[in-house]
Length: 294
Ligand SMILES: [Zn+2]
Ligand SMILES: [Zn+2]
Image (cartoon, rainbow, N blue to C red; front, side, top):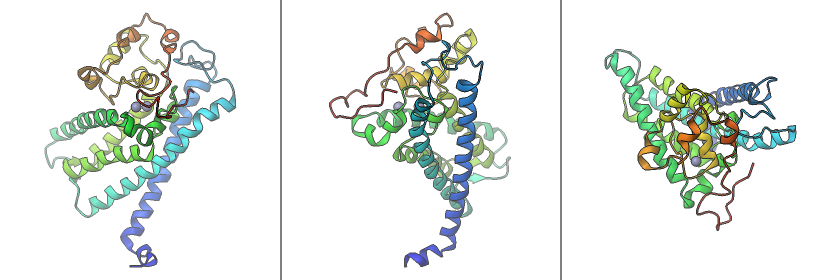
């Protein structure tokens, strides 16, 4: 089959059309969410996290050049990741239409209780999948081509939320594609999972200490991955690999030694923000693969 005949294939045309639509929606959503959150947290006059404030976890950027330099690589990687996610979403849609997935439309097909159960199941399994693939991606043999892009910034911002190397974006998409092929899932549950993933990715990269200055926030931070928990992962490479719950970091011994103190409401954000970043991932120092110090 020649290339032109291939392009005339209706299934391929539909796949391309859906991929483009998903891509436009994903990039538009990313830019809208990241820019508004960035403005709200860092640029808005009076924000307690704005430049010069001591409430943020990091020293604020001071010039437009610094801001652009910090954001540019995150945006480039995020747009590439959006392309990969969009093609995968279009493939899932095609598989659904062909009857290959376990997605269903009638809410009571497996009982209403199953809607909540399947949502929790998919999220707990994803939390486990992410922890171990994340640890794998930090292995010196994998890090440079799989995960280094995401760690370009030691001071993540909402722009970092979807900044993945193409291989890492693929690794993440594989989970959801596998889940819809194997686990019976109502369409609304799939939408809910995508919303949880998206919201979580944005919150984890706020780069600020949002609620931990209250007792309730500190308690939540000890069980759920939040801004400070993931900020520490961008600061230190060998701790905090979890996605939603701190469970696997506790069990596997990868929780930051000083995390209890970091969560204490009596500890100021400025002293947490003073935790020094590591210069490079362990094992790569002698391989010439260093990370940006920004
Ligand atoms: Zn990482
Ligand atoms: Zn991150």
